Length: 256
Ligand code: PEP
Image (cartoon, rainbow, N blue to C red; front, side, top):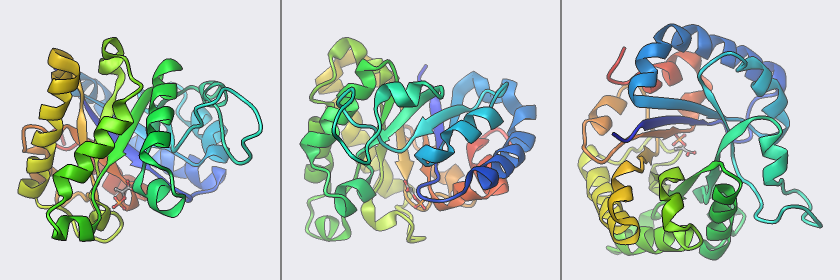
């Protein structure tokens, strides 16, 4: 059975002190549910890099996983502003978001670069959360599946088939991120189904073990209807992950 994943992407928000307070509140809500959550899902938070030490401390003894928002593919060197796998692993990071649309569109990360990052995350024994998704313009022109499948193929290019089970995909329509405009469960289900088919072509049976998350204005009000679709296996959550009660409610979807 594939496990769901509910992942918080805190983006460039929260100081270490604010993150500690938020994690204490998230833990107060989720720690009592730990046994139930562990049956079918993981819950992860991805703070900004300088907040990782405080978050790692605040998560000690919990079942919540620690994630990062990006990672460079080289081990070390002259890459100002980037961080390496070893730096992330030193704080117990287990998951790394790669190819988020803000990285692709604001910082011009190419499909090829995202693929290198994903492969490096896998090589470092961590789990990449590979984000794919179309812009509003691409959707309006009927290019949604072509764009998503191109990003998927490039993002997975460097990942050996025997490592497929380490990978998580996040379908995040760009027009739904931070806009309050969620994809309908039906719109999301079409893309998730196409992603699953492409994963089967690429990884055969292992494709059925990979979680495909939905991201884009997920809230406590819409999470249950999205999760009711067969190939939606969790959520990548931005805005709603900055409030303990809403993130805890999302992470416990179907349980509490
Ligand atoms: C995201 O940044 O990955 C995201 C989905 O953001 P939001 O939930 O705010 O739309």
